[in-house]
Length: 511
Image 1: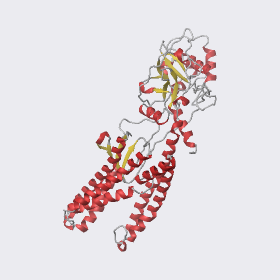
Image 2: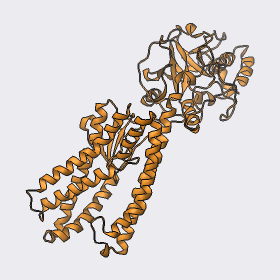
Image 3: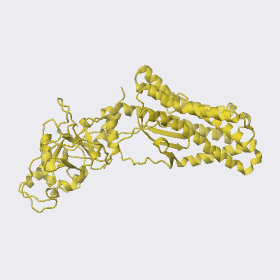
Image 4: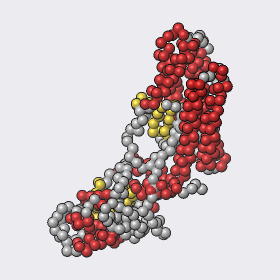
């Protein structure tokens, strides 16, 4: 979308051709081949009459009187000038849209915590985030157990049951019930770790979408990034800190208990597992909590969050390689507490597989953190004002051919249906325009091709970056009415234009 130099308002559209499905198309209000997201609610001032929007520096052009002798949607009367207008329509149809964009989402992962920041593109999002079985809503945040948790619970039950057989052989088959209890208690500890991140995020007024317990621990999906390196450090550190506190509590609880008893073995296992979770997450590489802490330190030193992300992500990748090579070697040497002489071929394969899975999670998490940091760096480039299409207001009974003629004359690429006083009622959808054969357009009223406006489809022209994406996500739609702070119509914003603009921004290298 072109931007005029003086006023900062979009110019009259774009002269570059773009492909559309069959037949010529008219000024667009959304992609013909991509329905895009659907609406979002946000209060907006009441737009003013169309004659107020006719100024030259705004995308919205004033209405013109339509041809005489026309009927509503399927009237049989055709104006004598319709043939000429149809010719204009055919010429107008060769100038569709240009803008390019496509937002993506951010996620941060770790053994017991993955996904501290999550930003997503303007795509339809259900009211409930989902992700497994809903277990509750502590602090108002939904907690889900993913199907993969049942797999890891069964694995823990089997492995811990084998260890119990050596320590407490008298339990017999009941050892597997004890092992299952241990698996549930361990993931309850992981949930406490995640809740620590959640409480800190809520304290810093950062929205938390959900907590999910899954195969390799948990995910806290915090939808915005911390505003300062200090808050980033605290947000990352509280998880491992709570795991260390739990390890200490389980250690203290072990003191009065007989070591070779069921309570003694359970408490010892929970102490060791929480200690491992804390130490592993303190390793200084993304996407682990320690990587977030390293990122915060580099951010504080350099003043640039991107520099911190790059440093912590590359340390995370080095850490992934170290886990892949070092974990099997440490286990075979007995450094992890086992007897290296008794390691057999199956144990070696199991260790290598576990190391490969952990390394893959860390490596991809580090890469995703880099991608998400680049996403956030380019978010401010998405501005509603610069992406808005110039629009022409038309009344409900205006034939489509006449509306397209006016849009072409004004250099506009969108149509807003208004009432007799110029108040906007609905937006004409580009996909609907494309679906009307050219010879039918003089007899089809624009009101039959329009989507009624809701409050969430009214977007301020001042919105930009993450605020703009939040608005589009909350009320998914293919087009939005962009209005000034005074309530005047500024133009129409297409979700497809935002997506394409985002893709173009992401393709540029970071500074």
